[in-house]
Image (cartoon, rainbow, N blue to C red; front, top):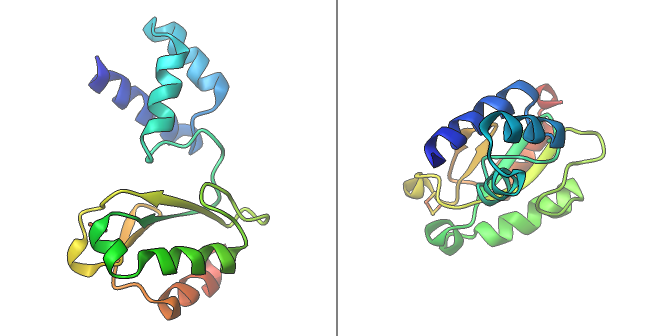
Length: 137
Ligand code: FES
């Protein structure tokens, strides 16, 4: 049942880029599953969003390999540059910043996902360049 629910949550999120309260309620009725269970899944897995995200989603890896290669320093850099905390979206709606567990790119730690695509060997210079690229917003 969990796999079916995960797939349904994924499908629902694909429509609106996040899981709205209305969408979760509708799915709860349709699947005859308590909304608390759906909400619990939606908030447990970092791939799901219960708030409307920004145009670009940065998920910085916080797992051991990336941590040991400076991910925490880069996380602080990003929160400072974007002037948001983890889980927040910039005022202009351009970036949402999230933390992630290992994304399977330990060989290029520190790494992150940018709109679901891995970007590795991160440095402050590389992050600044990504943020400044005008085509992102
Ligand atoms: S620990 Fe960061 S990608 Fe594996």
